[in-house]
Amino acid sequence: MKAIVISASPNDDGLTAACAQAAVEGLVAGGAEVEQVNLNKLDIGMCKACDRGWGTCRTEHRCQVEDDFQALRERTCQADALVLVTPVYWWEMSESAKAFTDRLRRCEAIHKEKSRLFDMPVIMVAAAGGSGNGMITCLASMERWIQHVRARKFDFIPVNRWTRDYKLNTIRSAGETLANQILKESAELKN
Picture 1 (cartoon, rainbow, N blue to C red):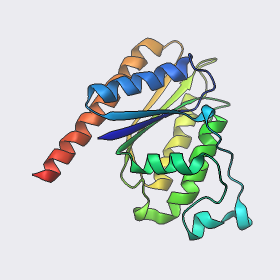
Picture 2: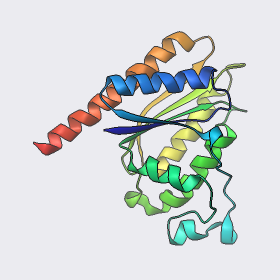
Picture 3: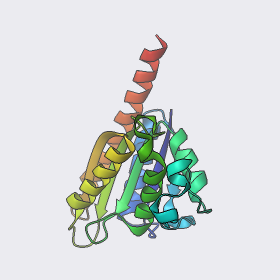
């Protein structure tokens, strides 16, 4: 079972990084092979809305803007599960998370049930480190993204600096449970 944990903060030792690490620990404890990616270390620009808003993403289901998006999209689509951890900026995902998810949505959403993310279980984490505001509106935006790409909502976890300790345990537990469930479903399919 392969999982990808994508974090979207420029801060390597803050709340978002701790949440991503907790997800990795939980998934590994559940038996998953995990790739961890920090979007801010990649060159993934925003959607250019090519050709009046629908370039090759509509006709060929690929983004024509050449950068690190293509390789990360491929690894994400090949995974069995996704965890996306973003800091909350202005009640929304970070700009790096938004750039990646917007472009991924463009390539996958119009596939409908043929989306390469169809039924992929996803854990979404919104980490609000400063004021603690905006966690729920951020998660609502993330939920809409999951619906667009036809993935499966596994868990949504809001965390702020005051809830950090017990929410890190929650994230670990969610990751472990997700890995266990996928491995169980896989075993049942083989029988």
